[in-house]
Length: 296
Length: 337
Image (tube, each protein chain N blue to C red):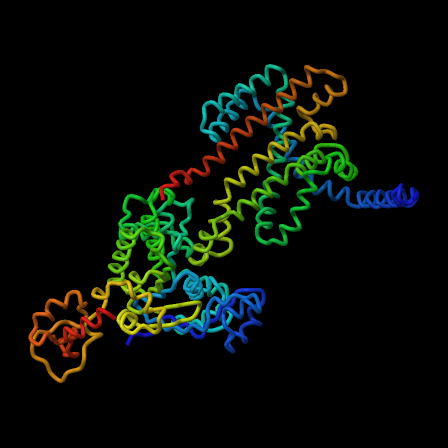
């Protein structure tokens, strides 16, 4: 009867032994390879620091001009452009300029890393069902595992600082771009691919000339999602030493400063909306050729 | 006699999990339905052999599911056969490496598709130049040649449109121009005009015939439409359930159908516009009286026949040599099949 009432779990001693073994093994791994890994990520760190300094050193009017220009180039819409510049002006007036620049820097670098890693991974995934079968569950884990859980090993390995923060952001933000690149390439019309084959296109010519261009709207939706998810990690990243809008939010939580939390939170929202509108309308413009369908 | 350009020998294609194991069974005579019932494999092409002469239009006709589209994809190996041989200019296509095969597809064959297969993100000019871009032809040269072919198919001024902005008939002209732009000797046309409405289809057939008169390509044309087959095809092969049931020119198909299936097909066509005098001519030693060319169709010959003495005309070839004679009675019998 007792057997049925209580699940026959492993004994406490066995379990703690196992946990300890894992912890010890990881500590040993981190002692051996921690430095090598740190060196490996060093260029990334230097780039992040450089970008942050550049954004902070640049006079604010220039940043406003760049924000306006990029918004216009991306969206070709006055509404979005004016909205973006106005949001930055308000951010500046409420004295959040420096934190916003720091956040901008880490989001840009994280997005760049995700693009560089994610698009090739998505292409690889689209090539074979087996690769897709292996990568999909890994992406599922990356998206659903509580961020604090993978923060532990990251901090054990690399300590507190910008790089572990960047890594944490990337782990969370990478899946959508991989998934949507894979999906986009798989959705390319079989008839068009057959035509490319019939004209003797090499696998490379097919990938760069047909598959990627036709998957671009989907890939762009992936980039958009990746940016949104990276922004949503800003607060958590600030817990392990990343500067930016997350730091005051964190302070607001621990001290119950409502106004401070709200202000910085809204600044993050403003950034998210600007990024979203600009990338989305750019993605839509990439599909200009689809207009005029439906006349047959 | 013209030379053979493409030669297909004892071709088999079996779809399923282990087609190689099924091949010997099929070669021993296992039928299509038994193969499906007992082994769950589909017989796509069943022992097809076809010699395709150069510089002519070879039509392969059959209803859907007859394997005609599968057959044409074997010629440039978009589909790998299960057994058999394919030779182009005497070269074994199946022995080619990836690189050789790409070279074949770039230079020697080009293809027009039923669903056009245009690249939706490229403008018309860029679509026509696609084959040339793949070959690595310099941009200027490629654009120049593309423009030439766009003019030839009557799409001047549409270079900067996207395929999605064009009607079906215009899109297929782009498909045709793209295929012609590479100067390939062999043109594979897979139901190229089947998706177009009848008037446009007739126009496209005319464009093709007109171009062929000066280009003399080896054209392999797949269709399910007998009228189209008879209009275009110098040689016609008819497929059913993956096997070849008759080969010959239009006259033979119409006058001597190999079985009831083909006879059924040919029942509804306008025989007066297809049957030529040469197919009916009975040899005679000499003939005086009105003569007509062998290529005259009955529709045009009937009035002359009716007015001729004895209601008989002589039939001569291009050089004016006597081939034989045809009576009105022969002609009327031929019309009724």
